[in-house]
Image 1 (cartoon, rainbow, N blue to C red):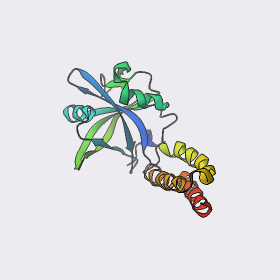
Image 2: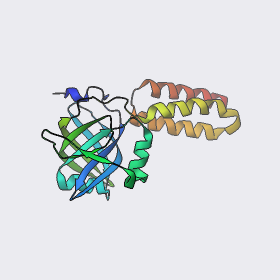
Image 3: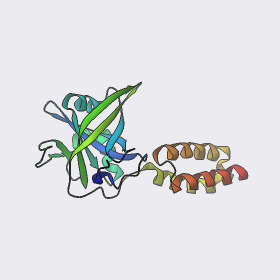
Image 4: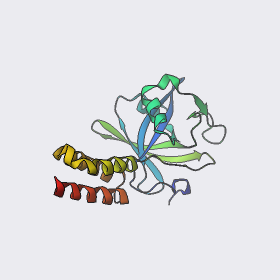
Length: 197
């Protein structure tokens, strides 16, 4: 059964979020890509050695903070000491750590952690959510398509380097937004540039 709080997430698309969790008395935070395949659970691939993964393992819970500015992802990765945290005010997830100012959030309980080599695959179910649904979701496909569009006009200057970068952009877009209009459009750009170089 699908969860209506996930209706704005397209199945299989990867969205960039800030995950918060508690490790003892300390709050951990990190930028991660999350997705849903079934509309009922969220999934993520977390690198082993991450303090956020350690906190999730210890507590069995996490909060997905939907941010609408990539600078928040940068802060969660490179300026953690500048982050400000809040807590879920009530409900089943009362007290769980939130990123202050995040437009919306989902509190999740771990359903499973599966070893996948250098990463752990997380499956989690929603136990609580902010009243506001996710606003503008961050998916890398949109920005990569814009860069690909500009790159496609530089073929004469860059030669095969443009083709190589476009191929990489196709690979990433196919991963983070499979079957999307962005994927179709960047494949069209690649074909055009390959014929011109």
